[in-house]
Image 1 (cartoon, helix red, strand yellow):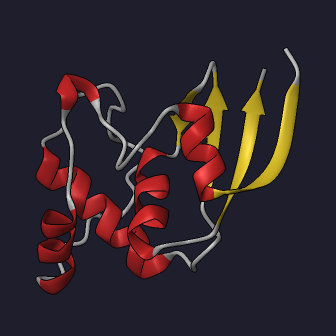
Image 2 (cartoon, one colour; image 1 turned 45 degrees about the vertical axis):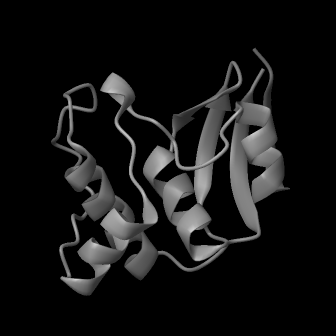
Image 3 (tube, rainbow, N blue to C red; image 1 turned 30 degrees about the vertical axis):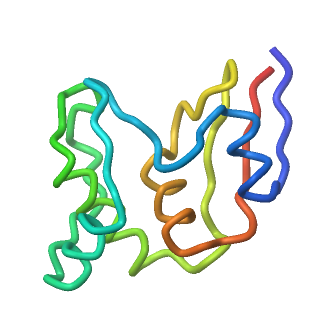
Length: 112
């Protein structure tokens, strides 16, 4: 499997992965600007937690809290994602934060 590292425009990542807005999570869970804005306004930020089960179902409010934390704590254009088989395999919350902020660039690890 070839691995390519690249810094790509956000729009190009969206095209590569077929995402036309915020990513969707298991169970077709989505977030929107209003939910993220409420978390930011209320400081309802959820920091990364390496102990959590990445396959456990999570409600939209928790996704929004994780995105809000990244918006506040990760500098613009510093988002990184892993793309494999045309999907974001790692970094959906980071990518959503980049979209919300209006970042121009995303660092990508592309597995081909």
